[in-house]
Length: 207
Image 1 (cartoon, rainbow, N blue to C red):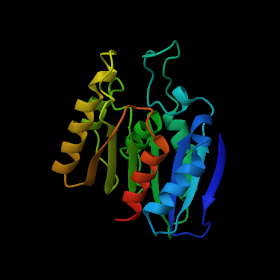
Image 2 (image 1 turned 135 degrees about the vertical axis):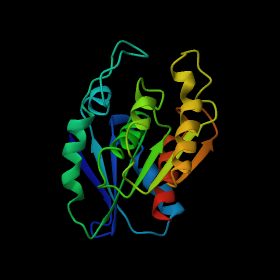
Image 3 (image 1 turned 135 degrees about the horizontal axis):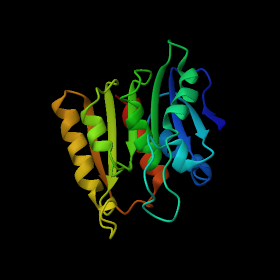
């Protein structure tokens, strides 16, 4: 696990974002977009994980594409991130794209260390997640959700449920009184992930 820092080191708002190598190549684009979308000062800690499907998955699940299944490393990853939130004079936000977005949402049911969550095109089709969230209590005050309007148009029956699942989560959060928004972006899962992630963090910073 490798930490990369951007923004202002002494900023009152700290953004924590799990990434992989592909995300790393787009960080400058994400930062530029984020600076266009907010006037707030921020420090962004990008956490490059070693094994994406293992380190961000809350529990084991079979592969849905390719041959690599999902592990159960999310708890260990979250434990490694929590020391980053030790300065109680700061506000901490956790966000990510795809499986990292699911991880961020899962973490919000595990800890109150983060004031807001940006779950951007999150993998909420993940087996068992709907049942999990219904049995847990959210521990943060604000959640940004987004999805591409073509993400559910896939032949894979599990992944095709992503639109229904994210609507259910949004409705549940609204019903519980959580500050939340569900934003629909143009395109499929691979359309402008950097811009979409910036939108999520900007919404949290601008509240």
